[in-house]
Image (cartoon, rainbow, N blue to C red; front, side, top):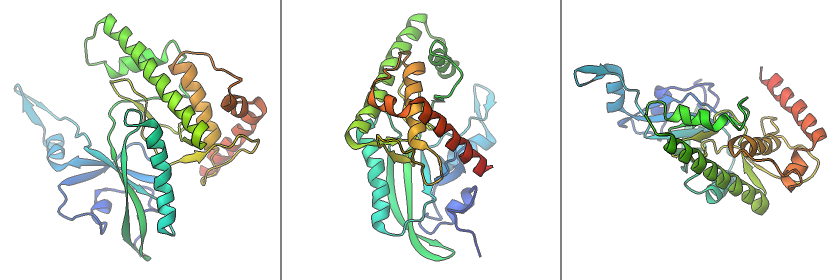
Length: 291
């Protein structure tokens, strides 16, 4: 029996093009993106004409170049089994909450849609999304770089092919910190008003483009925030809420270069030393179970 696409560790263009809701005559090529989530397949949507240039090259000023094809958008195929339309709509509502608070500047906007998937066990509901492609550099809150080096290193990575003045560099650093402060403020507003937080802790979940905004690109894991002593795990066994708030604190200290207010309710609750030790134990157990 063929394997359900949601169960496959990795998929290719042929897997996507064979889906009953994808046109066989589609002008696009689907390529696995290097960042994959536990909850969805992430595929680049590429123009076939760009793939041909990537493979065969193009001549510019007498020199043949092989530019890598850039996605027009990203396709997400959610792995979760959805028993009812209502359960699928609940997933979509959580995404829309995050989009509402972060707005177009701080999130890779996504259009979710429900399809009837014809799988090996018959027809069922599947959730997918077409998401904007964000070109930039990954922001890793867990980086060993401190506040004096993190943002300058991002600037260097994003502008390495360009000659810019020192005045431009200083202005970019200042404006990027301001945009980072707006991102942190919006996340805190979401926590305060609707008690939700997206996954800020996962590798590659945050990207900084040349324009300097922090963009959330993985919107599949949105957790509730409860100000009590229980350490809640997601459906994979990961303490995502606690780790996301820890990541938020690192963005404040490293990206914005400012000290934390340890009396602020989210940090007083989630960064309490004994709680952090318990979270570390649960995190280590998660990784052991995955290996």
